[in-house]
Length: 118
Image (cartoon, one colour):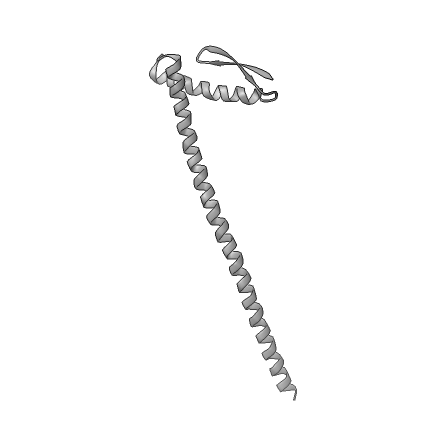
């Protein structure tokens, strides 16, 4: 089990994590700390608990927006995949029609050729 020391709002915290997750935990703590600092700059010193809750809510709001955007993109992807499948089917149908037309034309040309050779 790994341990990471992080500094948030001028306070040091020891956080346990899985081995190999130390770098990621430091990144997350830095991300959180930057948001704490931004809010601290806007509202001044309002207490650790309150600033941490506000930061958590701010990040949750961003996460919620990101999830909504991801869902919208996934829906767009489904529509595009559906359209692609439909176009593939349409293309296949067009190919069949073209092959049938070519076959009909070939038969007519053969008939014309036979009639001319007589």
